[in-house]
Length: 203
Image (cartoon, rainbow, N blue to C red):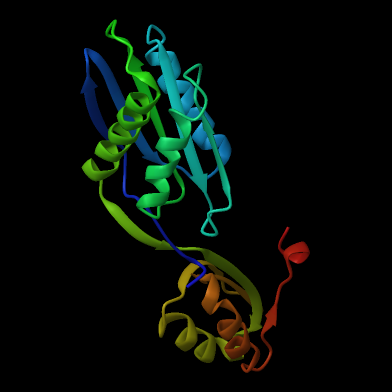
């Protein structure tokens, strides 16, 4: 399904050593590019004495928003291999930063690609991969007399009640998987007096 995606349940770490160079990988789930960049910035600040901090991130269930950086390593030897591992595990909403401490022996282009790839893989495999779904909120009002029908629908399926207010005119906000939202709207519309709010009306 388009709204289903895989990400990490929480932060994880990995390490790869080659010819006295040490590659420390840090992976974390993120919800936006801004959050990914903040995470990368924090890693760079903590390991300010490292030769390189290379990184990549992927955002969104469509996996169409991504960025990577070699951070001074030869072009294509660091950021792309890290991003490649995110793709290999079909992950999104994730950021990975790999910190390199140079050991004095050059690894060459192929050696760097392997090192950054393996460090990223170690971090991913050390974590827990989970399946999530894009969610959508539906807000609506309804008359008190229609409460029984609304509550039966709200509590009889997969929707989560986020907000509810009881008055002369009652209101509710439900959260549901994005690909099931249209069906929920249709079923709500079948209940007498239900008025689904638009985005402008909710603000």
